[in-house]
Image (tube, rainbow, N blue to C red; front, side, top):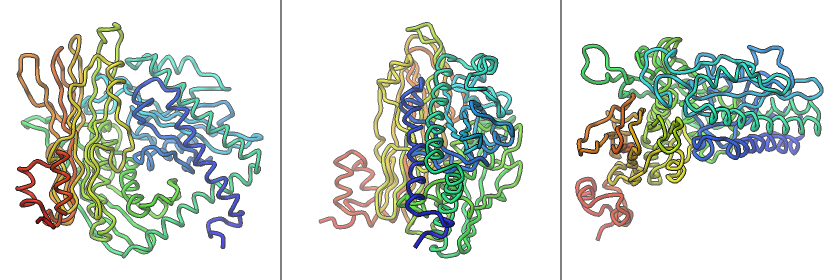
Amino acid sequence: MAHPALHGIDPARFEVVKNALLSAAEEMKIVLAKTAYSPLLKVAGDYSCGIFNARGEMVAQGPDLPIHLGSMPDAVGSVARAFPDVAPGDVFIHNDPYRGGSHLPDVNVVMPAFHEGRLLGFGCVRAHWPDIGSATPGSYGAVTEIYGEGLRLPPVRLYRNGAPDPAVEAIILANVRTPAERLGDIRAQVAANRRAVERMLGLARRYGTDALLRIMDAVLDYSEAMMRQALAALPDGEAGFEDIIDGDGVIEQGDMADRTFRLELALCKRGDTITADFAGSDPAVPGPMNAPLSVTASGVYAALKMILDPNSLIPPNSGCWRPVTVTAPPGSVVNAQEPSPVVYANHEMSHRVSEMVFAAMHAITPDRVLAGSQGTSGITTFGGLDYRTGQRFVSYESTKGGFGARPVKDGINAVSAVISNMLNTPIEVLEMSAPLRVEEYALVPDSGGAGTFRGGLGVRRSWRVLGHELRGAMCFERAVTPPFGQAGGRPGSNARLWIALADGTRRPLPGKGAFTAPAGSVVTVEAPGSGGFGPPAGRDSQALRDDLADGYVTPEAAARDYGGLGRGAA
């Protein structure tokens, strides 16, 4: 029997076209990785590729970053609305957080696909540029208005008739620190979109434009129906969670330290729908920890997708989110209004929002949630002149932490968690591209929360500054409040950040904001671990022995947290 969402479409043809669209989004990813210039895109994978219908709804996303699930459709929709005269050969560029973007370094390049004069839809590549201007290399300064965060682009036509507009390119390249690298990345984003357009055009030629457009709409309906079915299978209920955020990077007059602020979430699951309401969350903060509503929604969507679809059977697209309503008071930290700064919030707030959803959903479906993960993207940037070449450089890295323990498994060490899907930047690539030497990259013992299932470990990473003084910036969360344990599990470790100068002096670094790193200094970060699941007394003794042998847990912590060798000890 055909799925009700197919609307009379042949099921075999539906599957072929649906999977062809997903494959095309994956091909976009490969093209970008093979042609991009910056290590952040070539090897770390800080980008997402998608195929969208003419209304800007996402039909297919590649195996990219869940953080972009909620905001990419808003960005493409902004382009569609801004350019009703879209034509073949056009390419658009856009990064405005208040028109569907996330933060300024995430730059959307959008290309329409036409067949026989009819608009089929769009390809879009959202790529994080290591620098988009501003006063700080990497564009991660703690400013108080979006105007200081770098070059802001509303939807702009970058190409016309298949050729770039040199004036628009000149404006962009004049505002970034590494223009040659940025131009290479722009060209790579265009190339990836060309692959999307080619594949959409091929499907239209094979099946006809009308049939393709019907199937694209049916793919959205298919995901919606599956999501509603998954929601309906869970018990109805209401649940809430409050969390404390470390701060916004701006120390206000009269304060001695960054001021924390609060988020409040209320979930209401009824039948095949769910509402996430952030009423009660604090108002906007001065620094760049204000999340546009689409960023907040992305954190909600990512967590719900993992909870409702643990086997990843539901295609991730705009149809998935029709049963989900996300609301927040305008002007709050989770529904930012212009001109509030936003650069940290894109990943930091969506990390924390997703974990709040997991924590709250424990009351509704306790067997499908995990303990608190690292809760931060752990950003470290360096920039300045490379003494080896005399050229400017910008290095941007995300240090991975712990993935939370699960109801039936330990957490995972040193990986992206929940809203992210980035790879580590290989040390060899980093040292070739920047005047830095990585002197340590190691797991942090005891950073995973104790529990029946232990939390994943965080990592320690140290960079020595070579040649001469550099300017750096940090963006870390979980230095104040640790990743929470679940169902009796203990919390994971906090983030720790410091710099050791050449004379041996050591001082802490701020979790958010810029700093100066003299030549010969060593900058060290410890990314947070993650929470444990279940009471530590329930841990299997052999699992604890393995942890001791692997160095994940020290003998002192085993005695303190587990009282010996745990359940099943001789």
